[in-house]
Image (tube, rainbow, N blue to C red; front, side, top):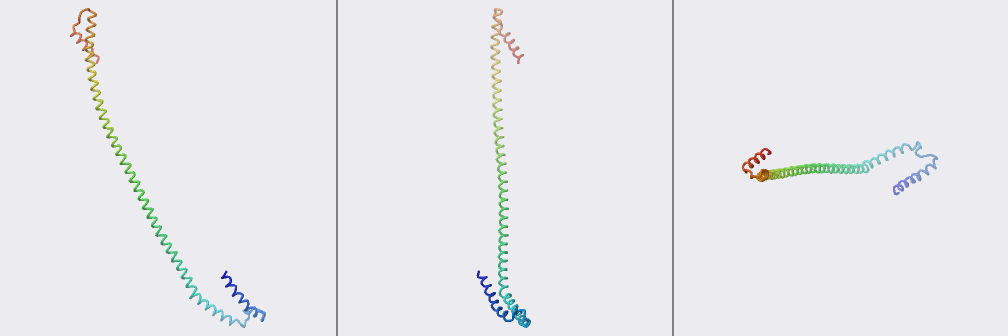
Length: 190
């Protein structure tokens, strides 16, 4: 609003000065040929004054503002590049630590599997040895029981055969001959 007022006031001032001149001569004073030389001189003086003001006051200030702005932009870009480099380094460090952690986890899992496998193999071999020992002991006990049973059967068979012969012939049987016959019959079966 303030800028508009500053622009309007000089415009009205120009019209105020130009109105009497236009009324007196009936035309525009800038088109009057008798005033061209003075207008040209004032044009050159005005141009030189404006050029001097612009080159000494306005343009250096604008240049400083632009340079300051460019420096700020360059600083911000440098900070952004620095932060990006730090972020990239952090990501790389994170990924490296993640891959190291994965490798350690895989190694730990492999070690646990190997240890569990070794323990299972050791337990299985101990169990196999214990079962083999028990099987051998059971086999020896079975063989002993078989021998005992066979010897008991032989004695019972000799007694039964002697009793059967005695009943059949009404005389007591010869125990030595009955015993040898039963022994040879049992040997033929086994």
